[in-house]
Image (tube, rainbow, N blue to C red; front, side):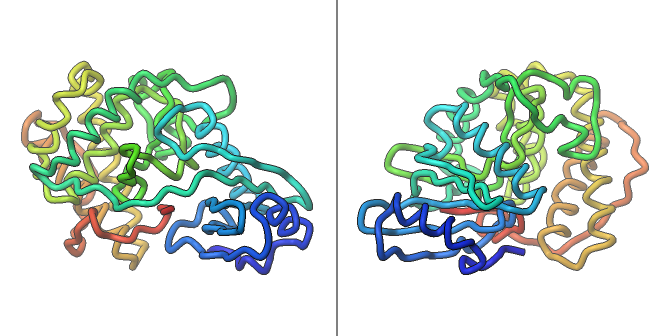
Length: 286
């Protein structure tokens, strides 16, 4: 759960005021929970998006996000300034405005996404501490390991169409992994946006990292991911958890039907929803 802006120490708000001017307005983010504070801050001299954290886990996530955002050109929001005071880490990025892309079948926005993915697939993780596949996802396969830096949560609410092109926000779970892991995680969102599993995989085939991926590794990923979300759905009443259980189970069933792969994963049905318009826990917007 997010903290209120008024929970920030006076020294923190004073340091922000020095950078944006006074008086300034604060508009809290409508979703997401990877930082204690997330809000658009508009002052006489600047309009920025501010994330601040003091809790250990939130600070760690914000440090990951700061490092990833500074390491990648063009697609993440640019870091404008950051500081630490009174046990708070504060990061300000450019404010991105625009709609989320439509990832449904035949949408022209899919071409923008494909171009972005082809460029990002060559991004190597800088030196430092990052999530690995097991730490990020709770499961791993030897071929999931790699030197790439992957966002790992490309749901539509983390994608923004701007005048400068498609941008990607919320890098709190940036992970060092093989590039194909990013694409395997995207399959569930394409299914949620109306693609059949077969359509989603055919769309992925245009991406070199996907075309070169070992099929057994993909089978293993799909089955383990479905099992994970089925287990989460058994313990949760939240709709977004059940939606992910549904979409991942559809993909796992498709993989099994094509390859004969076996799994002990239970099939957990959930209410149908459109991932392109769904407000999901754990996402952020600008």
